[in-house]
Image: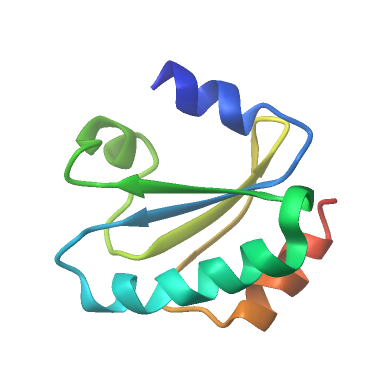
Length: 98
C-alpha cells in the first residue's frame, strides 16, 4: 500500500489497471496496455493491481467491477473508467496529464 501511494504521488501520470486473473475483459486489456507502454514509454507509468491480492486497495478506491482504470498524477485521481477501453481513448486521456 505504501509503495502504491508512493508511485501515484509522482509527476509522471500513472495509469492504474485494477484487474482480476479470472476476468475475460481484463485479459483483453493486456495488449492495449502493452501498446500504450510501447507508444508512450516513460511519459506514463502503468501499474497493474490484482484485486484478489490487494483487496484493501480495491476497497479503498471503491472498485466494483473489473477492469477499472484510473489515472493519477501528483497523488490526485484525474480520471476513472470501467470496462475495456481502446488504446486511442486511453492515450487521448493520458495526453492531458504529461
